Every structure is written in C-alpha cells, then in structure tokens.
Image (cartoon, rainbow, N blue to C red):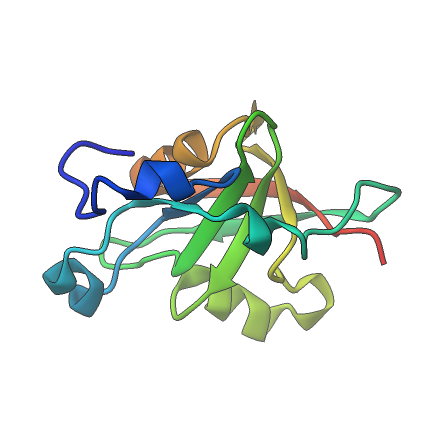
Length: 143
C-alpha cells in the first residue's frame, strides 16, 4: 500500500491476493481520499478467468493534456498478470466508442505498453500516468 493510504490498520489481516490500482481518480474520489492501491479479500478473486488460449489485440491511443484513462487495473499478488478491473469516462471509453471491434473490456489482460512488459499494477499505472502516446497490447480472457 502506498504511504498515506486511508485504509485502517486492521485491513492487512483481511488481505487476499489482489492488488487494485486506480490509474486516474475522479475529483470526487480525490476529495474522499480514495487510495491508489487497494488490496481485496481472496473471496473476490474467485471470479477471475483461468488461463487458457485467448485473443491478443493492440490499441493505439494518445493522451491530451487534460485526458484521463478512466480505468482501474488489478493484479493477483505473486503473479505478473495485470488486468482491467473497471472502465469509466476517459481515453479508453472514447477508444471503445470509436473501435467497437477492438473494445477494451473488464478482464482483459495488459501484456505490453509501448513495448514494455507489464509485470505489476503499479508499473502499469505509473506508465499510464506519465507517458503521452500508448501502443497497448491486451489479451482477452478465455471464453
């Protein structure tokens, strides 16, 4: 958890194996002190798709000065799988409207960003916050 998180000290005893990172936060979330990294209980991990053959696809997006991605990503602790947890308003929503055949969906795994492997949710969030042009390779979960 990042320093200054507003999670109570009892939370570590309830921790599961998921790390969730908000790439952008809305003004409302910022005002409420919503933490950038949240670890969820193990029970919420059970709905994740099992690994298997799946489709990879690439999107290319450009972040303007005031643009936000509007997504959160999650990672199972002790794994290198980073997946899309939620999609709100922002660049990815605009991409989805313009490119329905290559729609980014909840559960898609983020494989590469600008040629770099995505080994942690924190690394993905940092890259999405700091870079301006993105070539993102994603992988659909198995059906």
